[in-house]
Image 1 (cartoon, rainbow, N blue to C red):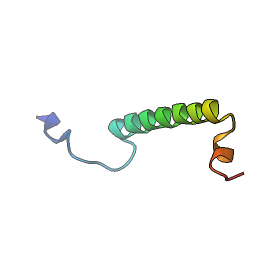
Image 2: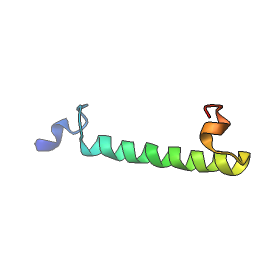
Image 3: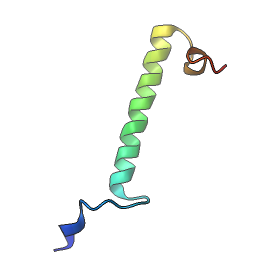
Image 4: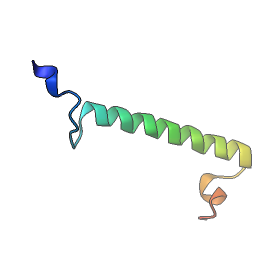
Length: 50
């Protein structure tokens, strides 16, 4: 019964955490591309940081 604790929350570099990290990074990258295409300026300029 090794899989009994698979839903248990764990800290660190677990496969589940890395999957979510990759998914959120892909969403952020696509969002930055859409902002650049729609506004015609980079994300940092769009937010007024540069």
